[in-house]
Amino acid sequence: MKKQVISMMMAATMVAGLAAGCGSKSSSNGGSTTKSSSKGKVYLLNFKPETDKNWQSLAKTYTKKTGVKVQVLTAADGQYSSTLQSEMAKSNAPTIFTVGNGDAAKTWNDYTLDLKDSELYKHLTDKSLVINYDNKVAAVANCYECYGIIYNKGILKTYCSLKDAKIKSADDIKDFDTLKAVADDIQKRKDEINKAGGYDLKGAFTSAGLDDGSSWRFSGHLANLPLYYEFKDDGADLISGEATIKGTYLDNYKKVWDLYTTDSGADKKTLASGSYNAEEEFGMQQAAFYQNGDWEYSGLTDAKNGYTVKAEDLGMMPIYFGVDDKNEGLCSGTENYWAVNKKASSDDQKASLEFLNWVITSDEGRDAVTNKMGLTAPFDTFTGKYETKNPFFKDANALMKAGKTSVQWSFNATPNVDDWRKDVVSALTAYSDGSGDWDGVKKAFVDGWANQWKLAHANN
Image 1: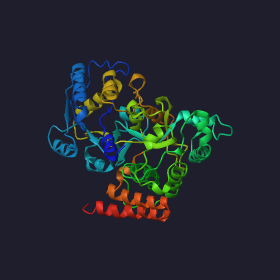
Image 2 (image 1 turned 30 degrees about the vertical axis):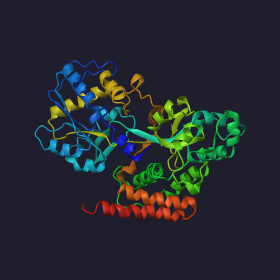
Image 3 (image 1 turned 120 degrees about the vertical axis):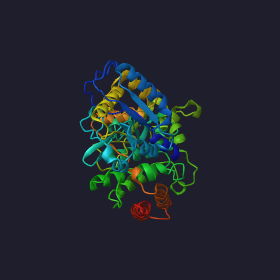
Image 4 (image 1 turned 60 degrees about the vertical axis):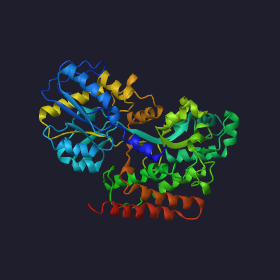
């Protein structure tokens, strides 16, 4: 998946919202609200143009059921920030709006209601999917995406049937050491696995391409983990980051990178050549593991691509990093967090919370979010026919329900993202083809971050 497509998906919007349930008669089974106790009104400033029709319909349905006026304004594509600034300056300001990251939470701090006691927060399956700012829950994620290591259940099942396999089932892979032991063994025994299962296995992992069409997986998605754990250690905002980094977990980054490039059929010296297609490799069952995200499901299962991997064989596990593997979930994140306007009247605040609680609990709301908008909501109310059909999201939800902590998207904090990543990729390429060393990667990662941060914040 190309970077620009990911950016669009990261901006995928509007899922449900916030909840207080004060006096609401919403039913999680049937959305049977008939009358709201609120005297207020709702004004939702919608982020995503393509969801406008669905939100307008939900607004009309809720007003008909409750008598509460719900206004929805959808900002033009790429104009949300300016529209929000303009609308907030009016007397009839939005009561519900989107906050994208810690910087936005800082900008709108005077306008964000603390949501720690809201029904929305209570229904959140993973309490890390929030923006904490100024000692409050300033905003709550309303949808999310996830990425990790996609794996082929069929290949792993065949591997587990071999004598002296390192695991009995894929479920036994719960940490980096086990993942490495399994991948090393698959790499050594790929011919044996091919003979037993009729595969065309070239390596345990797909190629770790460092060309422009693939390198973001490693300079962005894999690089997210050392950033996330360092920000966490430093008490920094996990989404907004900090001006300097030490590279505390770059040795872990190296171990994962070495695993990807050693247990693979790709030539380390040609990773930047653009001659590899990791999706095709995985789709044609030439590899058991493939680092990527939920968006790959459609491509891997599209009959037009002619891939041999079966939909029922697709699963996703965390990118085990050797830091907190016991508690680590998938890398889950979004740029879409719901906030409620603290400067709105108490009646309007209550009405807004009740409306969004209805969205995440009623049949009408959940159907719109999952089946019409095509989003995945991080709330425990989205079960049964309102649960996502994407198996990768199901894996993410299962990990959340098991108490695992999602790894937040700390790469959103990358300063001058294209320039920083370009230098990291260049250093990774040199390290991999033998023309450079790991110290070059560390320098690009740590010193490059500080330099780009200064340039990015020069006028602040």
